[in-house]
Amino acid sequence: MSELFDLLLKADESIGQIVQQYGTLTYLILAAIIFTETGFVVIMFFPCDGILFSAGMMAATGKLELSLLLLLLSIATILGHTSNYFIGYFLGTRYFRKSKLMKTMYLQKALDLYKKYGTLAVFFSRYIPFMRSFVPFVSGVSFMPFWRFTLANVLGGVVWVSSYLLAGYFFGNIPIVKKNFSLIFSLLLIFLILATLIGFAKSMLNKDEIILQENGQKKEENLVAKEESGESSH
Image 1: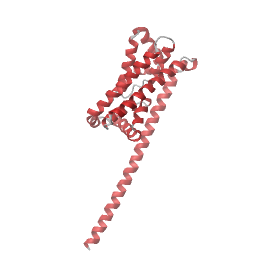
Image 2: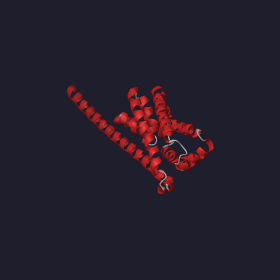
Image 3: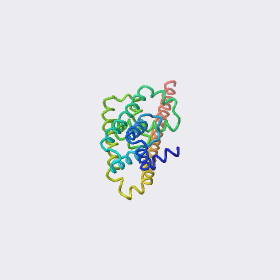
Image 4: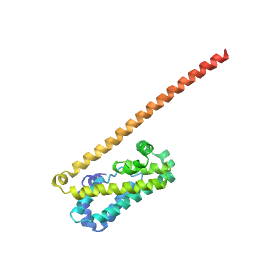
């Protein structure tokens, strides 16, 4: 686990070491990481934003080719979301029954996002930790038309990969950014996770209020029915 966090928070150093050790295989390694993080609902926490940003930094130094990164990593995340969609489509109901509390919490949040925003949820989900793994899965569970999912998936994947790679390419080697890389992405992850949890808490509170209102209405209806039945018996 500590190695995982080192990769995430020191991605600039880690990718530099991978480039030195594996050379051109670095492209396949990065593509495999991106595919895994977006392609399997069981991989809940492996945010690749810092990895993409760092890959852009490496491209700016000439150690990696930017155009090849844009192509391969876009394909990787699109294929990842597609596999996640089909996992949800064919196995989703069974997974919901077996999932633990934490997984159920994020699945419910993803379902809320999907119901509220539809294809926009698929498009933007990659920018939110946890949601990028669950939203395509929920899209499959909900039998979202595949053509609509694919449109949002392709556009969202290309925009997500391009935004972080290009940000790293143009801004990653600015001294203040490079020096505070770990701090910047630690704060970013904390902010995104807190925003997700707060949004989930609000949605749960709203649901509780709706349930209380429905229960109150049912009690009133039962009382009215009892009164009417009592009057009819007299």
